Image (cartoon, rainbow, N blue to C red; front, side, top):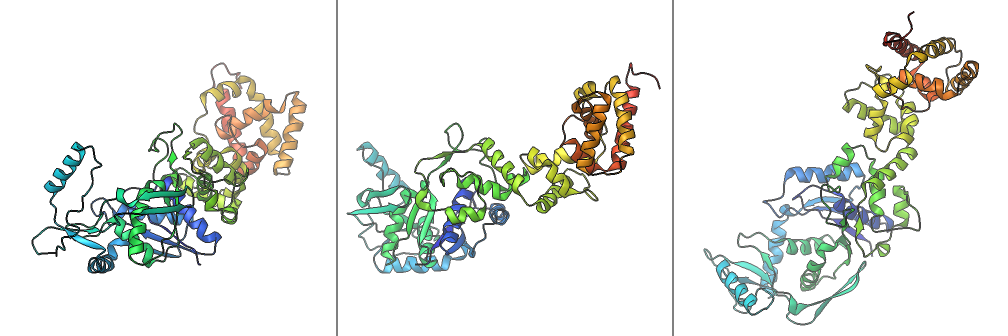
Amino acid sequence: MTVRTRFAPSPTGLLHIGGVRTALYCWLYARRHGGTFVLRIEDTDRERSTDAAIEVILEGMQWLGLDADEGPFYQTRRYDRYREVLADFVARGHAYHCVCSKETLDEMRAAQIARKEKPRYDGRCRHLGIQKQAGVPSVVRFKNPEDGHVVVDDAVHGKVVFANAEMDDLIIERSDGNPTYNFCVVVDDWDMKITHVIRGDDHLNNTPRQINMLKALGATPPVYAHLPMILGADGTKLSKRHGAVSVLEYQDEGYLPEALLNYLVRLGWSHGDQEIFSLKEMTAAFDIADVNKAASAFNGDKLAWVNQQHLMRADATRLGALLGERLKALGVDPAGADLVAIAEAQRERAKTLKEMAENSRFFLERPAAYDEKAAKKHLSAEAAPILERLGAALGAATDWTAPALHALLNALATELGLTLGKIAQPLRVALAGNAVSPPIDATLAILGRDEVLARLSQASAYVRAAPGAPAG
């Protein structure tokens, strides 16, 4: 059997991390077994589906690298096929026309509630043989078996048993002639030869109905795997304040796609004690049988940590290019800068590309002002002679590499009878505008001699102009 999975989002909202994890598990399972991954857009809810949401799904999948082997397929473009199967269902006695009005249904349910019964359609049109008539509103209902059980042998939850007597006859075509979600899903899974349906466990209750319809079609139901929910850190339903935002917002915030996938794959699945995975490693290790039954909690701090781990492992050339894009977004022109060197110097000090870009502005823009607290501490009057000696020593340097510059600073500190920090911090504030930067030798090497000397001169002028500074 060739494995065929599908990711079938509904474009009634933005693609968020719950959907991304489902897509990832489907993609990984297909890739692990040499199968096919299908992308299907379930857009039958015409009132709530939007083109903008579809675009986010497609852009998000592309950014994440979860490439589909087939699709995207759109349910709204398959209506002729659904109506063909609907007509066959009615002709073979698997479905029937129902003319019960809204008022009739409301009265039926009110009476059932009064009798302390489960409110449901009572099947009063099931055996009447009603034919569709012009001008008479009607729906089509599936004839669900009235006895027996449906056993869902779920790959995550194990065997789940549903009594057919507890399920009423589901509407599969609305009065406006449009097919309903559960029916479209069944036809799609059948036509697309889906072997494994991996989806959220909020769909578990739909599964017995779908299995019954698949059996009516003469189809073998796929293997089902219903994934537990992702909750907020406080144990409540995931919302925007927890991180349930568009996947593209994570791109905007500077997360690497492989880091987001790495974090999400571990929300409900594990492989020993391993925390950091490449996509190749995930593919080799992932098995749906290892997915936990319990819900997982989203943790933004853990996601940031995972992203930092991937920043530290990322190819330097790629990282430099991504940093350049981020700097442009900040209005900083990166032309001429050694972005690869900057990215390598910053990668261990930033949790996101956005943070890396913010911290790297000083490499491309001379400080227009100094951080007040840092300047008060490190650009005081006593720093004036240190800055002058730094300028002279660095101006005379013959080897402008990080190791040579590190040795030069150590030698100067010894000569002045100071610790390295006593000269490195004034130098750092002079160069970066604050007391935080990559190692000072790397910072000097990246900025270059001319820029370093210019910034030292600017800092010396600032110190001399400060109130109480010595004259001359």
